[in-house]
Length: 96
Image (cartoon, rainbow, N blue to C red; front, side, top):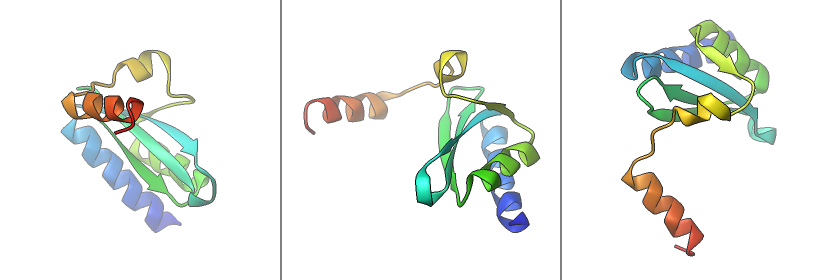
């Protein structure tokens, strides 16, 4: 387990370094484990999947980034979406 935590923490730190800092939210996704949603200070975002919620929590803690309980409010407002995301969302809405 420690190896998985260390690997995820390294990936979180790499993301944070590339985006001027980062904040995270951990969400349980069933048997697959947990999703770590990362939002950078520059508005960039990404995610990682951990094999368990416990591993995800420990990875975020080890990385030392701020963890949010939910993906809403000011935290969600930090996300910057680009042309790709808007086209993709529109495609989903119109059956694309």
